[in-house]
Length: 484
Ligand code: BG6
Image (tube, rainbow, N blue to C red; front, side, top):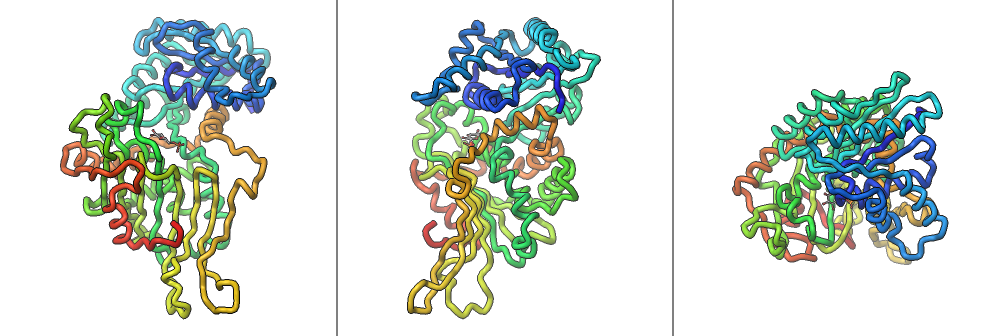
C-alpha cells in the first residue's frame, strides 16, 4: 500500500452531510487503524469563521452519540479530533484555498517521514452548484506538488446535476480539470454490505445462473421506504424530489447489479462496462407505468412552496430491452413518510407450470435481499405443511445476518467507500458514462413532472403510499406473497 502523508480535506465541514456521515466514517476508519496519525491529517474547510476547537466541539456529539461511551472510545475521539484542523474561506476565491494549501504543505513536511510522497483527498460535502468553482480552486491552488509521487483525488456527492444536460455540463467542467481516475462520484448505496454481495450471489452460485432470466423470473422489485418525511431538508428536497434523490441513483445502481451480465473480471472497468450496457438497454419510461405521490403535510414545511408538485413517492417500471430481460418489469419504488423504513430487492419467480398442488394461492417463489434494516437474504418457497395432511405452506430459507454472523460488525457504507478512495479503487463509484446513461433514463419523465404534466397523488403519512401504486404492481404481474 502507498504511504507518505495523507491529507483528507472535507469541504463543507460544518454541513449536515459532513457532520453526520463523513467525519463519523473517518473516525471509524481511524479507530480501525486505517488512518495512521503519523501520516494523516484532516482538514475541515467551510465559510463559517470558527476555530479548530469550535469545529472539534461541534463534531464531538456526532462521534459519540451514545451516552455510555467507554473511556477508550472517548480517548480515541479526543485523539482523532486533534488530527483535525479547520480552515475558513469561500468556495470561489483563491485566498482561502491558498491558505488551505499552505496548511496542507506544512503538515506534509511534518509527516513525510517515509518517502515523502503526498496524497491529497478532497471530499466535496457541498451542493453541486459550487463543484465547478471548488474544483477549479483545488486545481489552481491545492494539487499535490511532491516529486516523490502521490496523488490528488476529489470525491463528489449526489445530486450530480438535475437532468441530463446539467449533469453533462457539470461533468464537462470537472473533466477539464481532473482525469476520470481522479474523480470519485459517490453513491453510498454501493457501499452497503448487501449491495456489494450482489455480484457474489449472482456469479458465485450455481443455483442462480440458470434461473436468472426472463424464462424464470416474472418481475423484480427494488424498494426503498422511509418512515419519516423531509423534515428539516424540505428546501433541498423540493428542488429534487424522490426520483432524483433516490431512484435515479441508489435504486438504479442496484438495478444494474441485479440485471447486468457477468463481467469478464472484477476489475472496476469491467464491472462498470457491464453496468453501462444495462442502463443503455432501458426503454423509455411510459407515463402509464409511473405513479407519483406526495404525502399530506409535505407542503406545511415553510421551506416548501405551497403549490409544490414535487413527488415524495414514486413507483416506476423500467423495462430492459435485451435477451435476458425482455418482458420482465423492474419495478422501482421509493417513498418518504411511509409505514416502515426498509430497502429491499424482491425477485419474484414465475408460477410452476402444470402445478399439481394448487399452491399458487400460497404465493410464488421469491428471492429477497434486504439491504436494511437487519440485513438478510431469504427465499420464499413452498413446502409440505408438517403433519398428517398432504397440504402445502409457504416458508422461508433464511439467512439473517444478525443470527448467522453474530458479533460481526458490518461497516457503514461511507466508511468503506472513503477507504476505497484512499486505495484508489473505483469499482464502487459511478463512472461518467454510467451517470450520463442514468440521467438519460429519467430526464424525459422528470421534465414532464417539472412541467406539471404529471401530478403526484396525495397519500397519508404512515401509509403504504397511493393505492394506485399497488394497482400498478399488480398490473405488472407482482403477486402479493403471504405475510408481506
Ligand atoms: C440519501 C438521500 O442519499 O439517502 C436521503 O438524500 C435518504 O433522502 C438517504 O434519506 C437514505 O440513505 P440510507 O443509507 O439511510 O438508506
